[in-house]
Length: 154
Image (cartoon, rainbow, N blue to C red; front, side, top):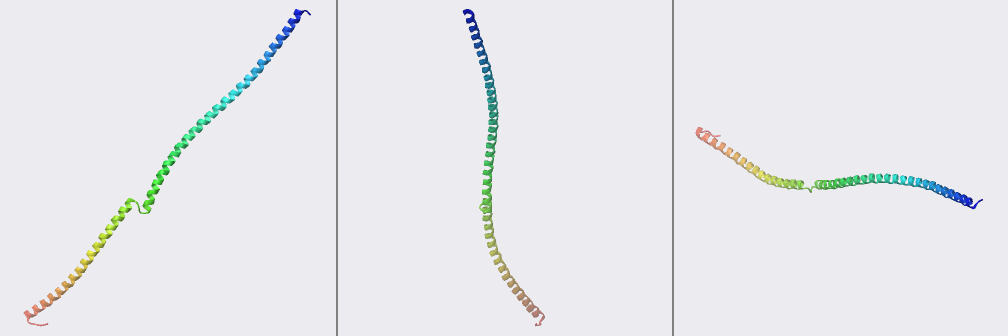
């Protein structure tokens, strides 16, 4: 073989080997790129799903915070009502205290009225006795006058 043809053959084989290596490297790189692309796609889908999940959880947390606030307000109102009802049941509320005050005043007035009525009743009893005595005396006096006019004695 001629040296030129040997160099040409070796060069051609070298070029074929290099081109083949580059081709295989390209295929490998292509497969690697496809795997990277698939991985990137999967990761993007995962990130999107997690982002949606986070948004959903954020909405739930917001709703739960609002509900917690509502329940806190309700509990506060119930505690106020409970305190008011306890005061009412124990008779310590303002209305009951005012009622007790008025009731004691009414009892005091009733007691005073009873004392006055009792005194008046006693006075009426005494007056009735005096009237009965006066009627008896008038009756006797009328008999005396009647007898002195008619001249008869009884």
